[in-house]
Amino acid sequence: MSAVDFLWRNLPNFLLGFPGQRPGGLLLSLWLAAIAITLGFIIAVWVGSLGASRWWILRRLAAAYVAIFRGLPLLLLLLVIHQVVGGKRTGLDFSPMTSSLVALTLYTSAYQAEVIRAGLMAVPIELVETARSMGSGSWRVFLRVRLRYALRLMLPALINEMITLFKDSSVLLILGVGELMTVARASLGSSVHNSVYWLPTYLFVGVLYALVALGISRLAAHWERKRQPAGLIRHLGLQL
Amino acid sequence: MTTDWLTPDTRDLLVAGVKVTLALTVITSVLAFALALFICRLRLSAVAFWRGVAATYIELCRNIPALVWVIFFAYALPNAFDLDTRRMLFFRNGVMEFLRQETGVLIPYYLIGAVLGLTLNTSAYLVELLRAGIGTLKQEHLESARTLGATPNAAFQRLLMPHGIRAAAPGIMTRLVHNMKNTALASFVAVPEFFKAVQTSISRSFYAIELLVLASVVYWILTWGFAVLLRRVLPQPRSASWMVR
Image (tube, rainbow over all chains, first blue to last red; front, top):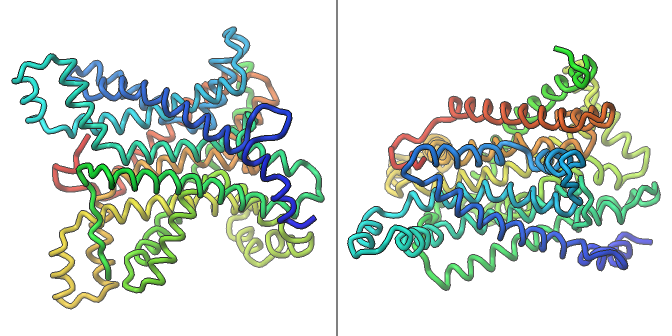
């Protein structure tokens, strides 16, 4: 069997997971990343706004949260969630899928919180003052002025973070939840005869990841251009 | 210090793991930084071909996950050859022999594969950071340098590169710390670094909770220490507008 045949035969597995099992492969990678990003975003808005708070104790708390979940490799965070927090001893007994979701969510929430905090700090004070002087309450100012402006400003960074998380989901191989990387590894099996397929398989999986990541970033760039936000970072188009 | 879960054996294993993690971090960071400067020069070249090469390199290395790169270089690439060719190409050749004699220890090919994968991945991110940093340079500065007769290479080395590094220092620092955390990925290809040592200790002693908490603390200390070190080593942005934090 040639390498192309091998890839062709396994293509449905790479994309949708093995038949007869729950959906996996690229679909599961995307699904896990999407849920983790959404949940992480909700946490990140809270933590990020605490980080940009007026009171130092709240800022400290937010900084500690970020330091905890950003200071660990995702790989270790996964094991800590799976075996320590969600282990048998605490009675939680997480399934690999739950552990992956929790770990990915916490991991991305710390990164997103930093992005949102930076965005909130970059909101011009005049804007906030104007809104306040027009009689808006502090919640209203936060939601309708500061957060809105910050998110608009930080949209490229947030999209970057989404792509990164999608790629980082490859690390779930260690728990074997059946996403793209696990499927790739499993399709190769442990047979020596499959060793010639290692190179094409990983090349193919790599390209698959790259295509999705590139696709998301192109889509985002297109969308951004259409909406024309404040173009903050402009490359000069330097040429030597 | 000896408790029932931290036996001398385990301790030695973990300490050796920390050393490998530190070595991996330093080697990949330095290599990635050097590679990033080179690719950045290509990316800013006046020749469209070199710009294209650099852009392709960046997109490929950035958009393929680091784990795929590591496994690709360490396992997939040697597997593409038959046994004898593989042995000659990856395990018993002049380079491996040289490394063995220079360092005094037998360096497995998997370690080199992991270094390659991590370096490629990190360098692509660093190029983009450097380019963004260089982009903050005022056009007039470059023009005056060119007017004063600086060749493209001189302008890059004496003006764009230092400015880019300085302006992008916070981002570079974050990325290199991220690279340190990424060295845990080398555990997938049997490199005996800290995370692998933790896993081995767990499967030997079953003290998962204690060892994982210890591992977390060690990683926090390592990443924090590395960040402090980088803040000293890297030139920091000068103007106050860069001090966003």
